[in-house]
Amino acid sequence: MLKGFSHARLACGCRVSFREGTTGSPVTVVVDAAAPGCINPLHVTALPLYDYREALRPSTRLGPLVDGEFEEEG
Image (cartoon, rainbow, N blue to C red; front, side, top):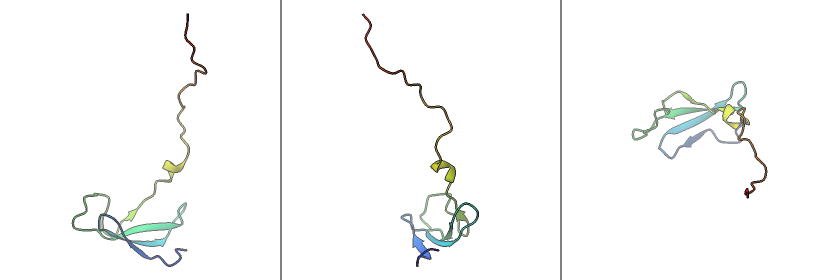
C-alpha cells in the first residue's frame, strides 16, 4: 500500500499518518498532532485531510469563444 511510509511532518509542523483509503482514494491522510504554531484551521488532530478529486477533473464550464483570426478593418 504505502511502501514503508506511515508518518510524515508537514512544513507547518503538523504530524500526519497514512491509512488505508476509502472509496475513490487509495490512501487517507490523518492529522496525528497539530503543531501549536500552525495557522491552518483545517489541521485538526484526529481528522482526515481530504483530497478533492473534483479539482483534478476537467472543467465542465464552457470556455471562452474562439474568434479565429483577428483582422484590421479598413
